[in-house]
Length: 277
Image 1 (spheres, helix red, strand yellow):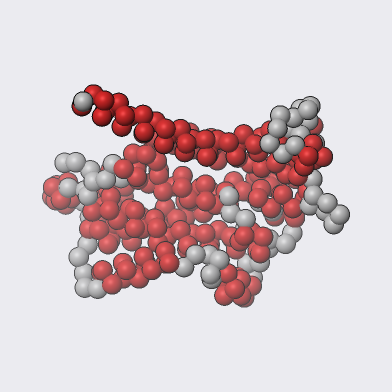
Image 2 (spheres, rainbow, N blue to C red):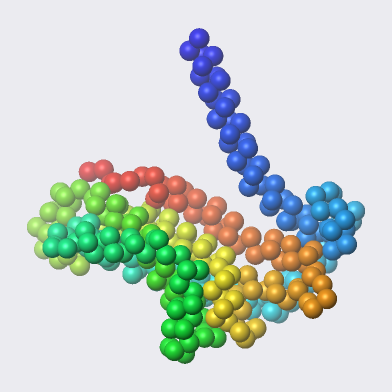
């Protein structure tokens, strides 16, 4: 009876995992195969097999200078945003976790309130502020807001990891003459490296896929990031949907590569919890 229950439980788990995998993989496959069709074939047969593979959709994009310029812009914005989020969030997260002072929880709750305000809610005052700071048509007009809106969640995650560091490690570091800043840089950060890698990759992916903020901030085409490149295939009289799907397929490759490269760090960083002493 126990064996039957275990077998039935495993079957249910595999079925749920298969369903979730299909929910993720089917849209990806449709995007790739849609990019291999002509627009007419795509509109008449959106989910069927292509009558002929139109590799020129991908080839034309890869040979376009604007694609590689947008790739460079996206890489710069992504790396600057991710580095800024991790660097600026790790310091207050460490203070909130390892330092006791009056009003600590109130200040920490003030940071976490930022999770309740997504970018779309604050877009009007944000746009006015960016215009006053002369950051319209500047990549920093995207980087700085992405860092600001990425801080609350990152601080919340990193605080738990810093709090999980054994007190004995900190005491031993201070006995050896280490200062608080030295303990943070040379001991705490290396110990929570999986968590840092996890939040870094998540910040990278979020920045890479950002569309709304770059759409409002960047008016010059030479400053566009990859998500804005889709606008090149929308005209006054029609939209080249096949080229758009081919373009989207190519932009997915770096994000999928980021995930597979850092999969172990993401899983470990978000599930490991406290460091065992």
